Length: 469
Image (cartoon, rainbow, N blue to C red; front, side, top):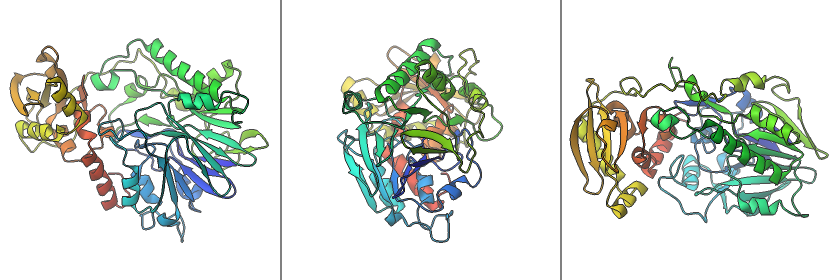
């Protein structure tokens, strides 16, 4: 079995009988804030995928794994053709998780489970949804799927051939069903496992612009989750994975503070931890190849040489340093677009779009949900307003940021009016909104995770012919 890294969680698996592409994110930038790190070498995607693929496997619906501008590149008629006779979308079978977990309108990531709709809208015809736990027989391989301990459909996948067994876990949180499957004399043998390092942002850094609290505890939780994964799977070789990006805003803005405060457990640290556990491990980057044969897994010659990356240097840029100053949120600077509508009009539309979200239903049940939001307008004034989602009412409170006007039990949000207008117009993906507002609640997240915004972004990607929305 031959595996080629395309950055982050994107992997091409060649079994000799089929070419299987996992979690394709094939552009250097994901959106306005996130990009591949290490960077994708020029021409790598065309070189690696020039012969097309037989299967696309999507572990879940988050944008860095289910990246529809990248999926468009695999569709006949996209701007980038990999050769003179590209594989047609109708010849590719797409495999992805579905049920039994019901969709949630405001779950994290793209907001809802819409993989089937997206793939059909992009032109793929051969769809194979699976319930995590199912086993799928291909021509030369068997895919055994495992659930993730999250509130939406997500899976990790064991690829088995006659001479190799490789587990790709994506972002999946270790599920007890996976623990049970690998416990006992009949547990699957694993030559290679890609285990997430799970460097998840400490609470409040991006959402409230405050220094990480209890940083050692945050790192310890990430390390403990990694340890349990490693000991459960007990692979011959383990690759700390699904960690191949950094924050890098467009323009000359400095986001180094993000990269030193939101990743508490880097792949280099995870590799060191494997050594402490007495396990063999390796790191790889875009363009590098791992061959799995005879029960062994090792880096081999590929588009990028096995020794091409200095991972100590690469991941030093995203090493956790809780002493790094976190700049305060400044809506006069941390903003996007231009304001063309009055503040009250923008907030009225925001309340209208809040209807039927999880946040709105909870507000109805609790009889609460009132939220203070301040808008920094293009004329330089910042004004706070009280939003009442139950009554559908906007009330002006007065000048100043929201935090100065919050009463008991009320949440707060601060944002530039121009940014809010851009979001309402569908110009920004939710994932691109990091550092463009601060809040102690999820009101904006509830609105901009709504399926209507997801549909807008897919349609705009189609109209752009695969360019980033």
